Image (cartoon, rainbow, N blue to C red; front, side, top):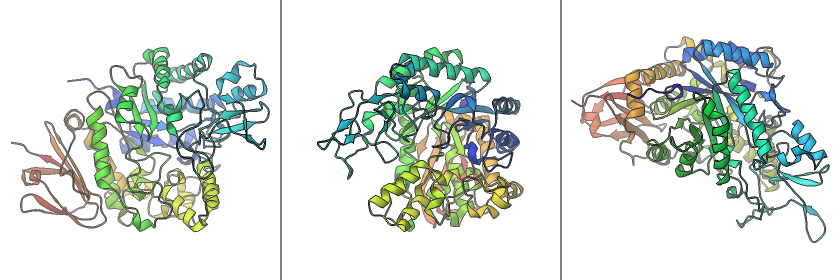
Length: 574
């Protein structure tokens, strides 16, 4: 039997350090706070944590704008705090991967400061510069009509350099020029530094965007009302980036064979493209995050819809998981996840706060028994949900939300519609403080946090759920422990993933017909539905269920599933 590398049998957990645990009561989470919660994570069953950026940053985009790659942000602690976190995590058998931002820096990075003031400096070519265009009236214009991901132009004008620099995210996050070999060597040195420090690998942020259309020609897509267009083909998943990643593998990763790498390739990547990143024979990294399963409730782009019109497309959701499995599993490993720090809470997307316990457990069971390495997002194990904010001012800690509010108002949307949409879709939803206990500020801090907590922490918090044997938290513990049973893990990762009754519009059901024949059935609706399968008539026993008294199978092959009811069965084939 194949000896699994550590990350193929791990259960991961994403930590957003700003809102995970505040050890010094300044309202901001920190590295010592994470260290203080390692035993909590160990109790849950976690053996891999991915920590979002914690390096020195002006925090324009919550740490993804890095000013110094070698220095921990004083908001989060010190370099010594990082070493202590690594030491204590490893002592508990917990691996750490860190967010490594490759696409851009902060405009307060020393490289950019030198680049803008001296066009002859080596650092000037670390970034992507173009001269202004001028319209018929002599007004300065960006070099082309490309729109970035934060609603506005992909270019920002720098008065000192008298040039535009490319920045597909915030204007305070200038994009790096990966065509420059000197820049690449700087990046590789940073990677080696952290691997030598004991970091176990990297989540490679925004790697899909490292190559650009260097002709900088206008997009031929139809422009929007402001003349700009978001044409991701100009700067996403382009061919040259695979050369960069292959060089990164040769220059760094081959010297650290146990290091894990997972790349963020976004929503424009196909499974074929994903294999170019992570194929076991010719890929450069271990696996890729895409977003194909993150928005299957219609919330994205739902500005004018009511909340009751947001309905999970179960058919699309399960077929997207199946498509990635079918296209990739023979040749590449996959990560499993519902959401990350850029998405709304999964319980509010695919579950239901009125059925918090039932839907929270159902989402755990469905995710944890699919092929790949599962990643939970902080608070998912508690059933944390989207914000209940009543003011647009509460969203202003997120640059993309600030830009969206300005853009939506220009387009004539009223504040009530904007508020409803942001409560449904904003990145703030996943970034609220971790709800540790029924205490002021959810036990996250003794002072008001930078991001407001959700007000349901009296009912939804770790302290109470740990004590409740029927809680979502303890269901996750059970499910993770079951997944780690080697016989079950073999079936999950080494036998086929087969959708069952795949056209059912309400139920996500799948089987692993291995030595242990596993069968997962999950109702994604807040009402009762019927489900039928010939396998229900076979002798089986229940490994996990989310109702204390499960629904009874009738007529040999049919079951009436209550709201969000789910099962994990072992089928006896003989």
